[in-house]
Length: 253
Image (cartoon, rainbow, N blue to C red; front, side, top):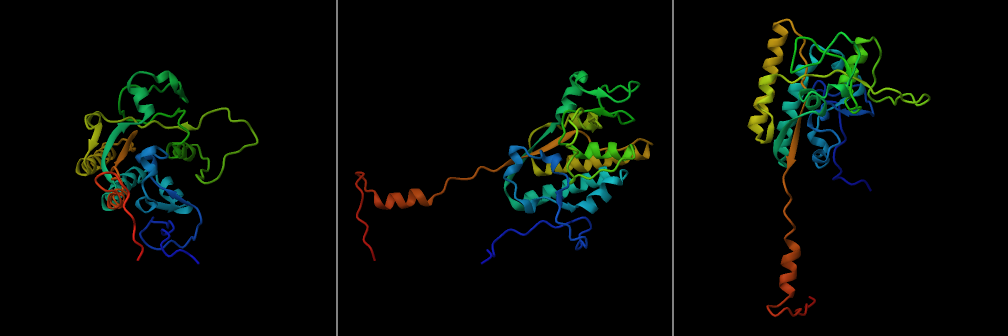
């Protein structure tokens, strides 16, 4: 007999309507922004995340002009889902590892694809293609595949017939100076949502000024609420133990 309390299966939420692809493969669209596969996200239930099927993920991802704005919108919706769930206390807003390395001058850890391009300081007018050891970031490597004219499928396994020689190509997304001042721990829901709204406005200004817009290399890590210890264990024990520590006899009814 099937358990009626089983959690609902993921469904594609690309357009808010029922997806006709009936794909068995779903992807947590922007989980990398919230620390994909990190300890802080393990306790977040599946219904909090936003899923796309393979077809709609690729469609959204290849629309590079719309993608950074969609990422902001999806991050806002995900945070609202976390607030409705009630299991998140607050958030730590931090730089991704490659942005920390870049800002501290450890740029030698990145292989440059184009020797004429330098990655220095914070956000500039143009994006820079480099190699990063973080193979978990499919979003940046996907855009590199699009620009090279290669196909990209996040659900297909890589070629295993040849040994892996190079890390996936990652496009760094420098963090703007104003966003550095917002970095910190224990940000409230309101503060975090405001950062995302300000970021969306910043991206729009870059487009209007003739620059490319990209979601920067930041992470929004949720701090989960501490679960209180169960009370029934102590209560049941107190009923059977007297003030002297003797175990009282239990009368069966």
